[in-house]
Length: 147
Image: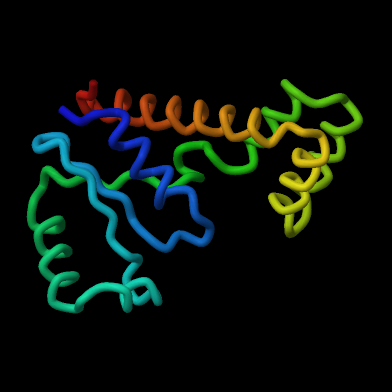
C-alpha cells in the first residue's frame, strides 16, 4: 500500500516538468517512491554513474516498481488551466487564456495574467487539487492500494 501524499509529493517535485527530466516510480509493496533521470539526459550527469546504475537495476529488476505516467497521460496538460479559467475568470479573461493555449509560451502568459489578477495562489491550490485527483484516479484504475 502506498501513501497518496508520498506519490503527490514525488509527482509535484518531478512529474510536472516539461520537458520531462525525471521519471517518477512508486513501489506500493514497500511504500517507496523514487525518481530517475530520463536516459541520455543531462540530468544523468547529476548522479554518480555507479549509484545511478544500481538504482536503475533495483527498479527495473523489481516488478513491484511502477512508473507513474507523465502529466499528459494523467490529463494534467492544458486542460487544467483552461478548466481553472472557465471556473474562476471572467468570460473575457477565459477567452484570453484559450488564446494563450493555442500558441507557444502559454504558461508564461497565463501566469502573468493570474499575477496581474492576484489569483496565483488560487491557481496553485487548484492545480494541486487537480494533481491529487488525477493521481488518486490513476491509482484506483490500476488497482493500486493507497492510504
